Structure formats: structure tokens, C-alpha cells
Image 1 (cartoon, rainbow, N blue to C red):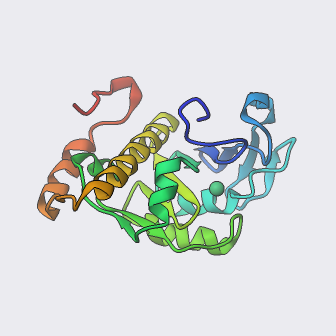
Image 2 (cartoon, helix red, strand yellow; image 1 turned 45 degrees about the vertical axis):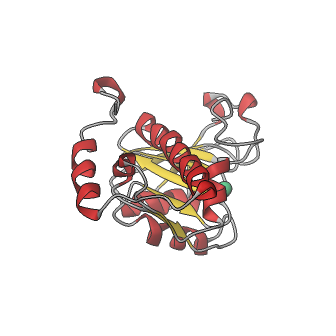
Length: 201
Ligand SMILES: [Zn+2]
């Protein structure tokens, strides 16, 4: 995440679910110091099953994403363009066909203090029916059937937000009609599992 410039410092967090257990990054630890043993395992009710360190303060948001979707992984970033877009609009519109990776325009959750149940609730409202949302004045969240898929979506979302910022800075972007968004969402649903992946062209 650091090399791909999705986070700065120890911000952002990642989790993966297997059955009723969630492995999630700990709070406040620089990524360079993170080892597998330090990644804690928690139950879906948030209690620790095997965790040497306190979990990320955003554990409630991760658990809300697992309650809402059948995702096996959640990636939360503070990537620059996505965060910038979260200050400006209520929704990242259908500016490019890759919006189909997220099931349509990506909503921006209303602002709430980090680490709170209020933020988890606002996130869940914005994520409903999508594979990503932006968090108002905060960052981005993506889900996936695998950790690789959730991660790739975070990278694509950042790219789309960057394109949108450039386009709106230069003029008034043309947008794709809803029927085309539906078509590309269906086409792109077969992409994304890394083992058998065909990248969008
Ligand atoms: Zn955050």
C-alpha cells in the first residue's frame, strides 16, 4: 500500500475473513514493521481470538462491511485522489467504464469521526450494492472476494478519482449513461480473481 501510494505513515488498514474469523492489521504500527505474527485474528463480534496487539480502530467498519456483503477482504486507504474527491461530491459518477468494477457510481459516505460506530454505519449505507465507497473527508474502502481483488479495486478506484479530478479541473466531463454502466458492470463481474484473471483492456 505504501509503494502504491495508497497510504502515508501507518494510516489505512486491511482485513481478510475466513469463516467466522477476521485477520486485521493492528493499530498504529508502521507497515515496514508489520509481520504475519502481528496481524491479529478477531471474531465477527469484534472480540479477539488471537491478537498480540490492539486491532485497527476501524475494526467496526471492517466488520460492518462483512455483515453487509459476502466479501472475503476489505481494504481501507487514504489515497490522495480518492480522499480529494471525498471532499467535493456525494458520488463519483460514471466517468469511465471501469466504474463497473464497483457496480456503478461510487457513493461518498457522510463524514463521521474515525473509529466510531457512526462511521461504520455511514460506510455501510454508502457501500450497499457496490464493491467500494468513499468516506467523506477521510478516504476510501473497497471489498473483494479475495484480498487481491479488494486491493486491485483500491488501485483502480484511486486511478478513477485521479482522472475525475483532472477532467473536472479542465472542463465539464461527459458521463456514461446508466444502461452502459449496467452493461460494463455485468462484463467486469468476471474479472478480478487474480489466479484466473484477465485484466480490463
Ligand atoms: Zn482511515
